[in-house]
Length: 123
Image (cartoon, rainbow, N blue to C red; front, side):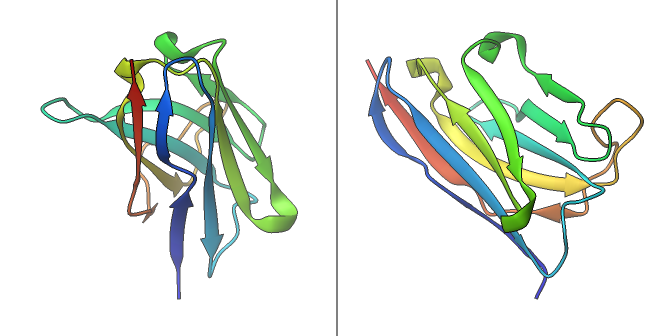
């Protein structure tokens, strides 16, 4: 079965850290771009970070630069999002997706989606 499964969400105080995992089964991340989206209640979904596994390009939303780090562990077919110095405005459902990348970028379309994991940051 082809699927993406996120984990690692939870409740944390402002200034704390969480590490989200996005694990793939039924396919490999090797030549794909993996992106983390988030969506807060009443807000549009936004792209937080992506990793192009083909050329190692990364992207970060301006508001998370310097606080979040995306990385991969190909042996485990897993991508991580390390989130440090979390802020209440980071509260959202975080989802990962994978798709075929463009050169030095993410992907235009995403073929695989996870179900999401809740991140709640208290002030």
